[in-house]
Length: 199
Length: 199
DNA sequence: GGTGCACGTTAGCGATGACTAACATCCGTG
DNA sequence: CACGGATGTTAGTCATCGCTAACGTGCACC
Image (cartoon, rainbow over all chains, first blue to last red):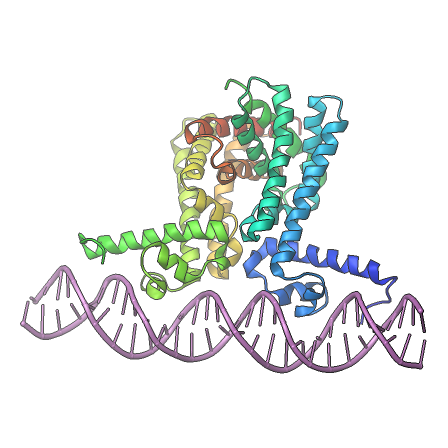
């Protein structure tokens, strides 16, 4: 039905990625329980139970999706922090990386902070752990910049900034990404600066 | 089974409110489609189909919930803006009102910006309209303060600030509300100030 | 003190959805 | 060329869920 394929391995990888991408879009729009497996299949041109050739179930699909996002975010944070000359540059790089992700993968970002509750216990713990580590990267950098600010306050501020950055899907059409990026960066920096003042 | 009641009207009101409240909590935690009607009933001490004595269906329950939130937010914004002496005070009052709502009704805020897609077409349009009007209250105030800033940028900044303020449920236990309130206020103000600079 | 309405119950129906079974097809490989 | 694995199909099973039906029961009111 489709065009010729290069190699089975190649194809399998693509199909899996395709499915994850389509599922992310659908989950973001209608919620995990609002999307039948049939629809996910349809979105990639196969129908229904074909998905079980690639994932052991709907839960596994969601788990893999969130685990992937969490570890990518966390990894990028570690990389960025270890390669920056100082905390100021670290913070800017963390912001830039998160904004890039939020602008390029709005569906993943959306699912990432909505559907954790639908992930089976075991994987949920892993994901939570990765999320916590990601937050701690931010908190560590902020603590270097403002040692006198209590960690709890830094954590709360970090969560608030995530909320700001992840709001991208809501203001979809307002501004082009090219303008959105510096706007978000400036707003987030200003918010963080305000957060650590006069505590 | 329960204790004596004062009047039927009184009771009916309470039961409806009780149901809406419990449903909000459940929807926020597991998503609209993830919550069976049975569970909503159980959360208020009745079981299953008793809800149909108060709402015409699950959809209607969600619709009423979101319509209520949207109109309350919008109304509070109108009140606040018309009673403030100037735009500066308006902005602070808008922030204060939104923060109060987000801190006191985290479940409602969560459902409000997640489940719109599950509301039937007709009501969805009403809700969208109210949301748009709410945003426009903010944009109008911001435009008075910074007339040279393009409206699209103000709208995007407003959405971003909503994301920041509505992130409350994510940082639940980090800080007490008493500390959270001024923190969010300061961060949001700073973010807005940064947003309207050098466009 | 009967009557009607508000409010609840349990049983069951019809639809849907996750998943399995059984079978087909393509394609690289010995 | 036979074989086997990867990948797909359709049909069917079983559980769940929204909702309706039929049936109590207490309380306000004439």
